[in-house]
Amino acid sequence: KQQKRHQPLTIITTSIMAMNNLLRTSATRLWTRHPRLVPVLSSHIPYPPQNRNVQPATTSLRSMATGTRGARGHGWLGKYRAGMGGRHLQGRWHYRDVEELKALNDEVFSMNESLNKADNIPTEAYLELSVGGEAPRRVVIELASAALPKTTENFRLLCQEKGEEGGYESTSVHKIEKTVGLCLGDVVSDDGSGGRCHPKIGTYQNPFSFEDEGFFVSHAGPGIVSMMSPGVHRNDSRFLITTADAAQLDGRFVAFGRVKDGMDVINEIHTGVFTKRGRPTVEIKVVGCGVQ
Image (cartoon, rainbow, N blue to C red; front, side, top):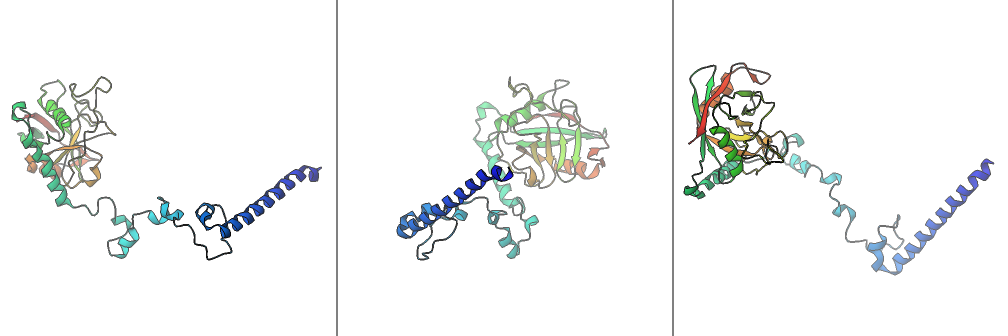
């Protein structure tokens, strides 16, 4: 019974092998008699033809592939042999020209000169920071109002809100990242866990955040003011001020301003305030803010 059960399977296997041999023989004959069929048959014949004078197809599969093993790393082996370091030193930000990026940032901020003076669009804002109840010190921020009008308008409106209306006034610096900068701007819970944009910026579908407007300003060096986005197209009120070159934020956070005056205040807070797991042990308050 077992032999009878396996007999149809044996017949089918034998028939398939015979058909493969027949197709291989026929294709080989066509190969040798009709060279024009070489590009068509090259992907179907598993073995090379007997006639070695026939040239193979001009386009190989490897040249058309985009994810082959040799393409991974973007030539890191050649750079390593040239003395440019291994793969861990050939990342996205290792060979970035910071001076060139700063020059591009200057061009973005110089676009403010093209604004119509009749519109009276402010290009500067300020924050007055108080550390541990001491006298407040002012930090002036230059805004890229021409390049990023929506993001800068949200920041200006939150700076102009007074009292308990949900502005930056009376909020605190909730975190200090020693390798990045100062994090602040949580107008909801004041601990970095939440935030919302100004009601004039939010929409009916998304009243608490707005989309990424553009990554025109690079985080090249200290003093860059950037939105702290918890996700793609999710900008609310939280922002940070960098204290070092933060290349890892390019393309993730929308930078919209830079510190024009008062960078010494930021550096003193960054280096002089003791933190515990990033949280400052001294209360750092925004006692005043506005535009100028």
